[in-house]
Length: 364
Image 1 (cartoon, rainbow, N blue to C red):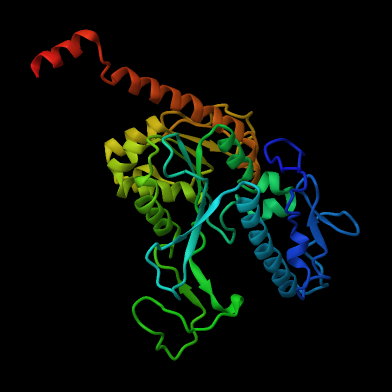
Image 2 (tube, rainbow, N blue to C red; image 1 turned 180 degrees about the horizontal axis):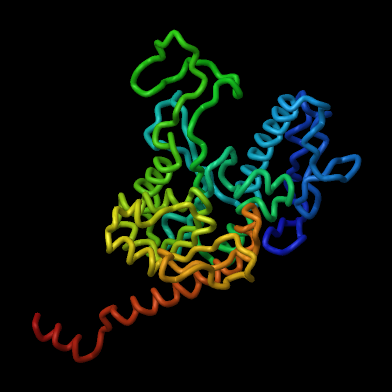
């Protein structure tokens, strides 16, 4: 049995399940227009020419080409979902947890025992866009491959370190009836649809926005997990979403989260924290920010006095490549930060001694 190794560079092998993007494309009306699949290196290549993806399939027809690209994006989303479940062995968890039978639901992924293990837990929070759980960027997947554009190398690294993993799905906010050809026959909120206007997008309760999704998963899963040490890796808009979570669940987050790795985050700590000194102090102490920059990886960027937390280079100027480029630096940072936290906690924990034990026995 050959397993897929997503952590090593250019070590992509077939799995026993024979997963492939091509199998998802076959049988659709786009079978000829999208003659692509991912090769052994995780690169998207044309089956006949071995060339990378070409957007302009139709001559002078941008709308048709765009629709074709959208279809490819949805198929990649489905393929990455399968990789998360069948290669990374993550479990899909549906929300809201009290959804009725026909109510639209969202979901996220987590590793086995992620909520019950006392080991550390890593939460992946992506940027805002059309892509879904498991992806840092759809364009990056298409142009640079699965190793650069998906979160799988991060997931594999965390699992190798025996850490729990939660992969959020903050952009799965609506049921798109037009694309999915679904009927208006299911439950929507507490009222039936009565509008005379056609409704094509139905919000998912608990996940109608990236902020709501993240808050829901925090309240019902992460905050209740056995893990005492939680770390977030947040990309782009995901950084802003995390700071909103920090502001609204301040004490919970400060007590449970030991580190946050921001990647090209668009958050504004001072504005979002409403100048709360305690929150700003926590961000300065527990967060680090990697930004796209020409400097070598992990080199300081900008003025320390102006930054709300230590800011370093991601080792690339390309926004889409930033997550994959700073992966080793992020895990090095998380490891060292966790070591400091656990060492400090150990020093402050009560240690039973013979004298103290004797005193307790004598007081009985």
